[in-house]
Image (tube, rainbow, N blue to C red; front, side, top):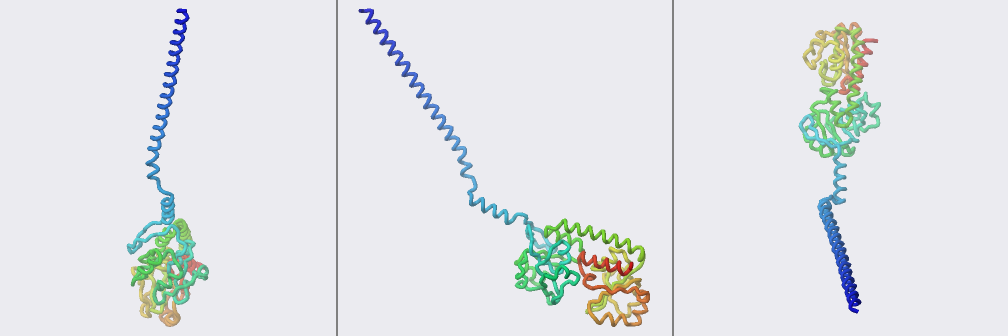
Length: 348
């Protein structure tokens, strides 16, 4: 009996011991689970805290759209200085250009202006095959008013000479569209063409046109050397304001003398022009004479005099009447006409 009771007591103690071990094991598992959960929560909280600053400093969608639109508006724009020192904002792309008296250069670059220079209703005659559908603006009494120009909605304006910008014109025109002013675009046609090409995004076209023109000059020069080596030519301009002989600094004089290499008469050897009268005709030492008549009357009056008809070039039949527009034009198209006229006169 005592042994039975002792046996029962041992089992009871063992059962309690096992129960205690089981409870301890369960408690340990619970503690481990709680610690794991707390660690995960802490990690998630830390991650959230790390991401929060990025969320707070990110650009709102509306601000991003505004910035993108502003970037589109100013993309490609740049600021340059013109010959008079004005800061000019050059648009990334120009579609409506107004450049009076620079139509030759525009067409050389493949650009048609929104309106063309004209005296009365007559524009540059030698360009009308390309400008016949372009409206004219009369410059005979000065530059068009801002109101007249605004109707053509130009997005870029180029003024040929500093005189065009005087008397408040620049201030008025620059309010209509960005306005670039040359001191004198005709002073160096190739340089001004390069500038215009840069302004209008036509740099490659400008360089190609100049390269093609130089090739034309060299070819013509070689031809003329065969028949006019060492010979002189006079370019006499018969204008309503008087009669003059052109030198070699501008228009056709530059082409004939500086590029094609024909000699200058003594009167314009170091001068840009010389007044011509009946008294000085005998002093014109020229083998060839090109006459540029801008108005009727004065040429006939002089060319019918005995002094004129006694000149060596006249006696030899070496007087050539040419169209005034290209011979008084400032652009590579005009210059090309001068070369063609000179070749035709002296080699055919």
